[in-house]
Length: 101
Image 1 (cartoon, rainbow, N blue to C red):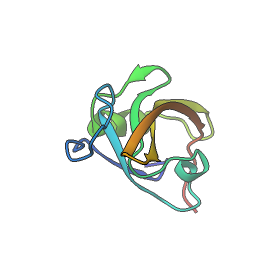
Image 2: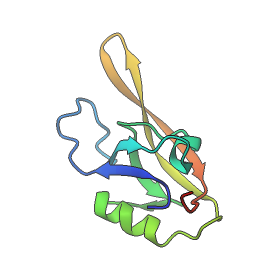
Image 3: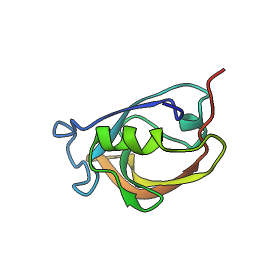
Image 4: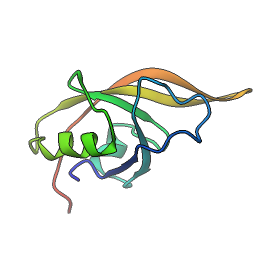
């Protein structure tokens, strides 16, 4: 999509993944809007502009409705490495979709 991130709803194998988030980032295109907005693999996405995205499919549908050049707020959790493994910290970021190239 226009954010150039790939997502998955399969998160059961990530210990401690936030229960309120239904979407996990699996890939971020280098130098794309997703990377500029500090998306990273294992980040959890729960909402866009405060509207819940219930699955990777729901996330794809939400970004397909985004307008190029308009800024959106994406809420969720970012992974933090700790001595005990991964922890997730609540976070949000702004992202502006672009066309590729």
